[in-house]
Length: 195
Picture: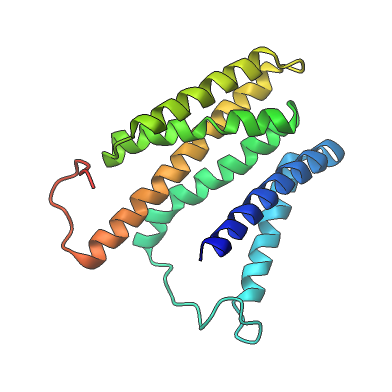
């Protein structure tokens, strides 16, 4: 079990790094981030359509008819945040190095911790706080010593960190809402509860 988890983590890290580098090259060569974003998302839709066919079998069974208005309203913010993440990442890659994007994007961990505390009531341990302080110090030192500093690139990165943090927090809110609505009656209060 641990061996498979290890390989999943390695593949996730390698694919994430390769995707960032490939996007940096694509944006540098192609120069049209909006078009690149549309092409990448269109390819994702094509793969989902192909994969959902029973003969291909990537997605088992027929897809249920789940596009109800209530579900669309719940998931639309997530889709918009995802598009914002992709777009701001591409716009930042046009102005700053891939290493800068990776270092600054790691600050989203801190933002997610703050947002989860505010929205979900999640507590953060002392070791986590020290790790996040180390990440912030490292990011500040990196930014201070960045030889190719570009203010607009850093603005796009800040928006990217905000979108990424909001996306990750909203996913957890949706999961919490889905699990609470399927296993127990809906809560009567709108205030977050501590899990």
